[in-house]
Length: 439
Image (cartoon, rainbow, N blue to C red; front, side, top):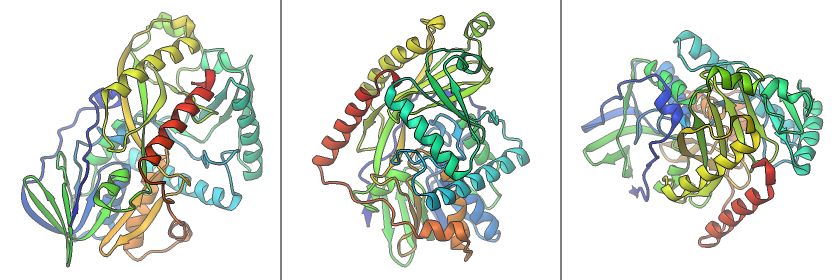
C-alpha cells in the first residue's frame, strides 16, 4: 500500500487556462470501477499515453484520472514552446553529447508530428504557429552561451540565424537585448487550449475522470487506486503524474518539483502595438536558464516568465506568487519602457519536474506499474512523445526511440533532507542573482 504524501493544488491565476476555450469537465469518479488499464495524470504525457493505448487496444477501456481539471495543472501553465531542438540546460552549448542530442532531436520532431496531426485532424483551436524561437542575451555570460549554442547547432547540422542588437527591434520591438539566436523549428501555442482539445478528442474507449484525487495506491494481483468516494482497479497502471509519483513512493529522492512563475498583460491597444513594433507574435527564451522567458501572443498580450521556488509538496504557495509578480514588473519595465505600467491581468505558478542529471524515467517502476516521468522543462514535446511511446512499448513494439529511452539510467539520487531543500533553494537564489539583467 502506498499512501500519497501530497496532492496537487495549483493557484487559480493561470491566464492560459482562463483564456482558453471553455469545456465541461468530466465528472469525478464515484464508486468502484475495473479496467485493464489506468493512467494517473491527465497532462500531456497522460493524454498521449491514454490515446495511444486506446488505439492499440480498441476493445479495452482505458481509465484516465486527474486530481484537477484538464489544462489547469502543469501542462496548461508552461510558456507554450513546442521545441524541436535538444535543450540540455546542463550542457554549456545546450547540445551536449552529439549522439544523445540526435536522438533527442528525433524525439522532439516525432512529438511535433504527433501534435500537428492531432491539432489538424481534430481542429483544436490552440493558436498553433510555426514562429520559431529567439534565444536572447544581454549579459556577457548569456552572450557566451549563445556563441556556444551556435557552435553546437553547427555540429548538429541545424539551421539558425544570429541577430545583432540593431536587428532585434524589427523582430521583437524591444531593443533590450544585445544578441539573439533565432531557430525556426519551434512551434508556439496556447498550452491550456491544447490540453483541453486533446482531452475532448480522446478515443471513445478512454474514460476520463477529473477532480478525482487518488490518495492510496494498492499493489497486489491488480492495482487499486483509492480516493475519497471509491476506487479504481486496473490490471496495469501508467504513472504520468511527474513529481507526484514520488509522493506514492516511486523514484524516492530523485525528482525535483521546481515551480516557475508567469504574468500576462491585458491585450495591447492598437496604438500600444504600434509603439512596441516588431513582429505580431514571437517567443523568447533566455540564454541564461535563470533569465526571463517571454511571449507575444496572437491576442496581443505580453507574457513574462521567471523566478523559481522549490516546493517539495508540489503545491502552490501565495508568498512565492507575490514575490514573483514584483520581479515580473521589474523585468517587464526593463524590456518594454515604451509600455511602462501596462497592467498584468494574470499571474500564476506552475511546476516543472526536474532531475539533477537532466534525465527522465521511462519504463517499468514495479510489477504492473509503468511510467514516463520528469520532462525537465520540455513538457509539450517530451510528454507527448514519451506518453505515446510508453503505450507502444506496452503493446509490444520496439524502435530506436523506445530503445533509447529504455537505455537511459534515469534521474539520479538527490541529497537527503534537509540538505536537499537548502541546496536547491540556495542554488535557485544564487542563479537568479547571477542572471543580472537577464532576469
